[in-house]
Structures are given as structure tokens and as C-alpha cells.
Length: 395
Image (cartoon, one colour):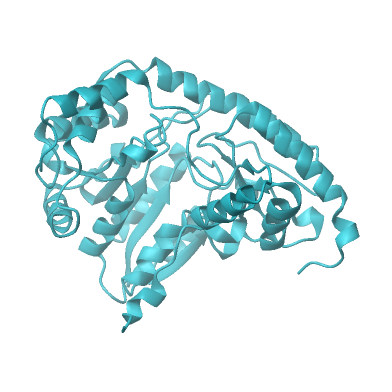
């Protein structure tokens, strides 16, 4: 059967590939500590589960509008207005089955072949995948460890050409946990306006911040709402990964196009999950806050533990639930180290290069796991690194 040429340009998310390998080892009787998947290990809060169950019992089992149920769009608009400090209308909201479709639909609606899209590197791999799939040019913007994994505004400006159509930012960030400062965002906003760019702002980790850092959205800067497509969702903050519920906020004409793409692709997002989402946003937030506090405790355990391992250097991130330690001191490549830790230490993690070429020299751990398992993983990593000299040259 003929395969379309464009499929060769479509990438993947390595976390799921590593999960398959780890599960295969477990099937052979190996004990694996899973630090590869960016998924909270908590259960969805009970009030949200109850709202979803009630919605099923009350008939929310049918098709809904492609852009989302009116009451769900209203709830999201009110939440975004409150948390970002801007006015948001429900017709500027599109609800999707998970947040990734916002990424795909928004780029499909606004990017032509040959357009240039600047994106963070290391960064979430689906950015580059979708850019390439659409026949656009992916322009990596390096994140710098010495700047707490932020980028230099001068580096951004140097990459803008007459063909630049879109800039992607992600704060707090996957895979590094870095957070763009208000000064960074102000500089980005100025360049976006000066060069008439579309800004795609991935804010899926907006609620997961630590150390007094609070999420600042670029939407609040003058003129940015009219130029920005903002992505957020329920998976991370409310442990709702399996519910598949995300959303985008964007200018109403773009929202209409994104809704049309959804009509052609998935028809709509499941109605009962949207009703659960309303409860997530409008109901009590104590369980979500407890999860975030627990993430902070886990972060401190894994950062301190990694920094005590020879050859590792780990920045303490201020957001999300990932660490991105520098492993250049081990003398081994990122891909080698990730594979070695899985097969020899029973610790599943990701090579930094899974997030782009500028991830070489790093590996990513998700600390969305118990402190007990994190400490087990740290002990195994320490022992495995101590044995590196016994296994010969890097491969």
C-alpha cells in the first residue's frame, strides 16, 4: 500500500516508546522505576470523577458542538480571564480531546508550506514534528542552562526573517522546568508585534510552579491577545490525562477555523468529560494544590540526589514536574545514558535529544512518582554510574 510522503516528516513522542520498552522488561520480571512519562501518578480528584459520572447519568453521552459545550466554554473563558488578567469571550475558546489537537489544528490553520516557525529547543517534540509535517521550516531556539533554561532575546531576534510566521513559547517548560520571566515576555511581545508574528503560547503547566514563582501569561501584555493562540488543559493540574480534555484560547476568527478542523477530525470532545472539566475549574482546588505541594517535595529530593552523583549537574526547576540534569561529566552521550539506565539500572528516563538536538548532554526525569520510588531510582543511578568504567567506551 502506498504511504504518503508527508508521513516521513512526522515525528513522535519518545516517552511512549520508552514506556513500551520498560513494560517489555517488566514482562520479563524486571523491576522498573518509571520516570519517563509526564503523567501525574495521582488519581483524578473525587469531585471531578463524581461530576463526570453524574454527567453520564444525566445524558451527556451525545454529540456536542465542535468547539465545545457552551457552558464549558463559558467556564474556561471565566477561568482564563481570572488567571491571566484579561477579558475572554466563550467564542474565543475551543475545547479539544486533549491539548495536543490545539497544537495541530492551530498550526494547520495558520502555517503554510515554506513558512518559518521558531520553537524552543530542547522542547516538547511535537512542536517540531507538526512544523515539519506541514512542510514549514522548523527554526530551533536554544535554551541555555546558565539562564535557567530560558533563551536570550537577542538570539530570538537573530532568528526572525521575513519568512517567520510563528513563534512558539512554553512556560513553565517541558523538559527543563524553566520559567520565562516577565522581562523575557515583555521582550518577546515587542518582537512579536514588531515583526507581525503569530505567537503560540503553551501554558499547560501554568498552575505547577514553586518557590514563589507565579505563572505570567504573555496574553496580559497589550496587543498580545490579538496575536496569540494559548494552549492549556486539565491533564497536569487535575491528574486527568486519561480524560483527554484540553483547550485553546485564540482570536474568534481563528477559533472558528480550529473548530472547523475539529469537525473534520474528531467531530467534538466527549460531553461528559467537559462537564467534569467544569467541576475541575469551578469546584474546590485543595486537592490540586496538595498535588503541587507534593511535586515540590519530590523535586527537592530528586535534585539533591542527582547533584550528589558524580558526573551529574542538576538545576532546580521552578515549574512543571521534570528535571533535566547535565550528564556531560559522565563522558557519555544522552542516548547512551538513557538506554544504559533503563537496561542496567531499571530506571526509565528520556535522552535529552528526544527533545531536540540542543538536548545533547542532558537526560530528563519526570518526578511524577512517589518519593519512595524516586529514592530507589537515585540509588540505582548512583550504582550504575559508578560502574560506567567497567563497561568500556560509549556506544
